[in-house]
Length: 376
Image (cartoon, rainbow, N blue to C red; front, top):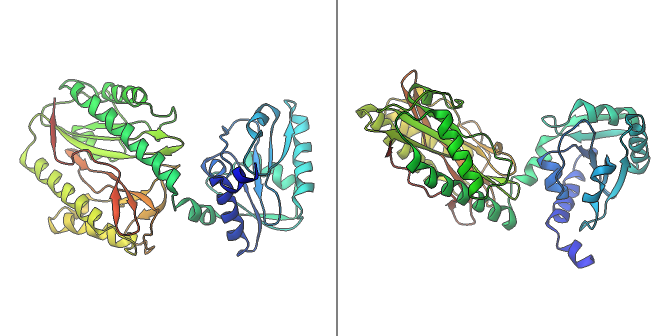
């Protein structure tokens, strides 16, 4: 067991977190169910009416408050963990938190929480048993750890991309003029599961044709695909808790000259941004490389979102590829490159790839053709 513990990726992550905490004024970090809790424990919990909280602190064994019905997940873990369980009667739940508070070893100071994830439910229980503690938002600390993917995480992301690409390749022959966006999204979703995506997709596929494709986050409607449409499909798969997130734009039948032009511009912008990625290049540099191609051609006002976002256990995480982000890219970072042009009430184009910064450059996980493919 000692060897298993020493080689555990989860234990290594916990140790890196503790090292980071030692350089702050935080007494610890408290997490409820979500990607960061899974990242640091290897366990998956759903948010429900039953509170679950883990606390990590220097010079202390991690502790976990959880319902008895989840306790089997804590057996034979490759690291030490103190657990405090409770039954179905809500009147007994405060007792588990009180026992955990006595064990944690501090009574004042600050504990960090993820402001985007910590629910009022869990926070109220913590505040009740640690009344002298101030709870503060600290997204950055865990975000810094999760931003650098290890070999196991990278392998999972490659698999998630492969699943998504195979699902799309199986879906393309099914696309027909007259097919609704909703029916196409259903077919793609089915293909994702047929090709072994995990049950939790990163997001429901975005399928938008014609004027709807000018809305970057359109929801599939009953609108039928029409000859001359641009068709944007944004989709992803999940494997081992890690996501892919890809976009390709198709022509439904023959598209007009301007649609073909903006597709080529977005394709060129995507290529310029991918070429700009290397260790030491800033997120801003990559965004500017994509944006310059589109602005020079006179379509700058129609590219109104960032060029990309980090990708991993969440579909949006650090680093963010935008013009004001001067963070240098470093090996192990994974993110999207997804420039777009959106002509209001007419049509839009987006081409999105999933990238990894390597020691000497970059790798694109995604390999599907970026050229304008005609369907229907």
